[in-house]
Length: 283
Image (cartoon, rainbow, N blue to C red; front, side):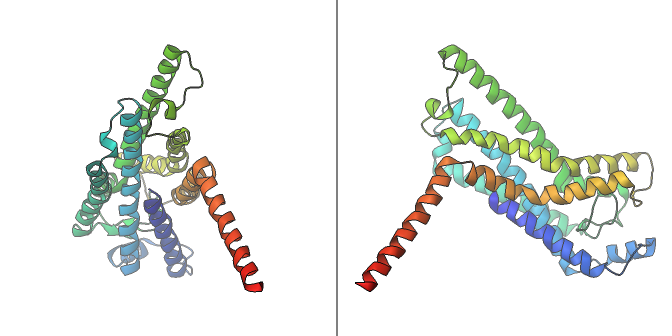
């Protein structure tokens, strides 16, 4: 998940740099400019589209798999999640399916420059396609999977919360933790549930823009003139889509007691080893 989110933020950074260099002298883009950039997006634009599409799909997939892992381990006490085949299957699905979808999009030549209200200073689906084609490929290569992730993780959160409340009442243990139910889970694994709220908070802005775009396409409205709402949502999306890796770092490193202590222990050992080497050199 961290690798996928790192790729997303790196791809967005690449897109922002490309956009600032290519369009820094254009105050207002005409229809002719839009068509020109759409039909000839350039290699950097296409590569950035491939990277961010693949990494976003992989991120959604890993988010769901983490939720399913907690569900099977906690509720059903499944040992299958600990097997090698389950880990191999998780990697095949989370990397393989996004790769196939991205390659199909590349084969159909749908990736490129898009200067409509559905996008921003990055490349994704080519804006010179028909509007309904843009909606279709936005759904297939990202937003459809994103919305599905919202639904699945919301269901998992409600189900896990209901299970824990029911279990605590039955055992008269209001402080019952994950580690007390399954030997394969730690107390800090409850932090993973917060990952879904981070996803909602950071990604909802892009989903809102997608909804606005679909609404305008259905009602035959203009999709290239940005209003104040579009601009605000675009800036929030620009921050949110690239901030997930940072927030995951806070959850999995700073807030995770095991990882935090491990990092601190390694730092202390390195410092102690350095002092010991210095002492031996002096004496």
